[in-house]
Amino acid sequence: MAQQSANTVSGKTVPDKSISDIVAGLNAHLDGLNTHFVGRRAMLELILLGLIMNEHVLLIGPPGTGKSAAVQAVASGLKANSFEYLIGRFTEPSELFGGLDLNALKDGRIQPVTSGMLPEADIAFLDEIFLGSTAILNSLLKILNERTYQRGQFSMKTPLISCIAASNHLPDEPLLAAFADRFMLTMFVEPVGEEQLGELLDVGWQQFADAADAKKPKQKTMPKTVITKLHKASLKVDLSGVKDSYAHIMRKLRLLGVPLSDRKIIKGQKAIAAAALLRGTMKAGLEDLWPVTYLIQDQARQGEASELLQEELKHSHNPILTESAVEASYGITAHAARLTAGGETLLAAKPALTTDQAYEIWLVRLETLLMQIDAAFDADNLPQTLRLLRTSISSHLDGTHMANTKAANEDITNEDNEQFTPDTSSTPSKPLPWGPRD
Image (cartoon, rainbow, N blue to C red; front, side):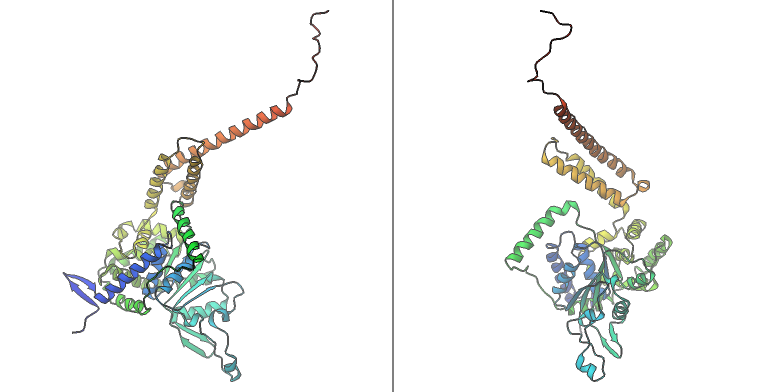
């Protein structure tokens, strides 16, 4: 009998060995990439999840945070054809989809030259996607939805597995927001945290050295067909055990006022199924509900949802998608606790001597932590433990500022005294009017 897509072992439904081997290979690929992308494991994982779903991923964040490099690295590990482009206000459709074949045009036919262009890519990365013209976005919409590129009478099926797009911020215009809804998963990418800056510098410097020596990091590659196998296997995952829980989560998100289209709610099931498959099971459980957070295209609402769904997401776990599962279920309370613990550790590490260079570094870290607290919480919603920590940090910084101001004022006073005190060393003294007479 031919081997089925899943076997039952000790009452637990698990994928067959070929699928398990692919998952193990992808995990090794992620582990290898993680050594070159400091603090970016969650982003790499979400790109991979989008590939397995055959859906699209939106990355929102400032330039220089490794979005393009991450997509290139994932694509190169899969021997997939990739296409990358930075879109601007004046980008022409031909720059993405290919120019017209002049010979075909002479014969009265419209036929673009698509070789090496977006219509023939397996994985695409489009930076600043919302700057595209109406013509570009309309063509993209058909490719994203139907995997079809059409120009006039010309039409072709595209092999696109997933399009990963990036932007500095989400669009405010309703038409662009509707276009953004075609991206199933959204992640907000922040610069690397200050606790990882040392590691970032080390890895970046090593990459400079490797580039100078023309050394390329060794990387195992797999055929892109492994993504197809995983996608087909994920569609056979049993979701019956989480259907009611998923529907309950959607109701709670609607009460919160989170706008989720019917399309996104339906396709969200693919994320749960893919997470279950990568966890090593063909039957989804409560551990696999965490991707719902990434269905939300609003950074503040993502945090609110993680907080609101603490009970539903408390079982979140995935041995492959470790960081993205943690971030998805990481609510406001957990963020406050993490900031508090980090702040208490930092305060306890105060250098003894204020003249020590380490003291200045410590002050900079205090100011950075204060900025992180103020960015995450406003004064009205600041948890009590974090409020006390903030007060303590402010007192240290204010005390240092006052001491520096006092020292500066004393220096100025001393300089003024030196400047305006008359020099009497060469001036002969006059007899006092009431002094003794000769």
